[in-house]
Length: 439
Image (cartoon, rainbow, N blue to C red; front, top):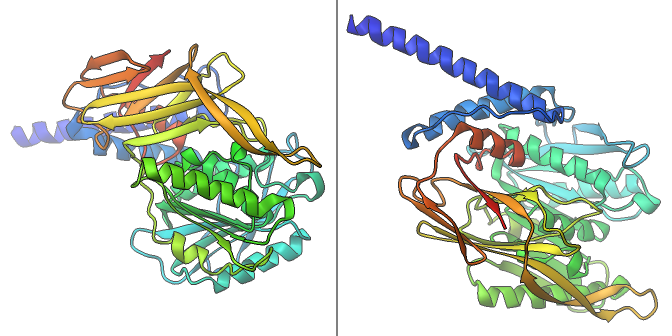
């Protein structure tokens, strides 16, 4: 009788799990279709069942993503496979992005590190081919490469424009889904125009990268706040005599800012910014990816700073374990300083006020800025938590701008797991606990 009972119980459990997975898969499918009536399935989860429930949620995510519009091809040797993605015509006309996708060396047990290479602003076919040649030479095997060609030239020759953000969002999702990719070893780098692009993308998507490496570039720091680079490796190489568009000066400002942040947080800001003596726009590009390869992402940092900035008019929906529900009613940017110690989460949310202190006298380009901060009001966000960040079996205290938001044991719910996965599409960030914050 006991054996029969256990068999019936086991079959019942399988049926329940299959039904739950189907509900979760439908939720994900609805989110892809931007349905406003989406309701996430809810069920309490015990600490002992977190990994089993994560596996179920991840399986549902993988099934739902089979219907997605963008996919990576099967992994082959670098240079033998090309594919292309059709980007949004409403964001950019005739936006087709061809790309190389291929590997060097044998796949490691944990998956390949994936390098995203962004080319410079010469004729796009020539620059794309040069990127493939360089990638084959770089001493970073075993590795996997995604080498895109810019869809259009002229005014559309910017890697950070919103049309290309469609590609980056889908690339990150696909990389996380791929059994060939190590989700904690994603790298972005580029040369010249690709240096500008990779510097912006490094700051904008910092919670996905293990490290980033712009070369022969130099962005005004308002376009790529260095605070966001905490917890990743950051290499930046520019010729000391590369004065075009103030590249050498702006690279120097980036070094100063990162050195300053490293003095405050020595373990967080690991960087190597170099102005190469005697060189102009052409430098040795071969040293960047071997340096980047030493870094592995920490998807659960207990301290990070996020300056929520827009890139070509678009904002991220979240960063690490923060999901923005409503931005403060202000024209300013928002800065989140998140610190977790023991079971206390202390968050400071501020408005960021920029003042230009140096400007190009000919074209009026803003080169250097001062910032000051004031307490932010009128916004809301979701704080996600898991066992990597706090002890879920004990009460958790959350303080925002000096005010205690909660101090209790948190309910662990599959709803939080599916909503966080739909937000970050990251197997490392399937959070069972959530705290809603209004400030």
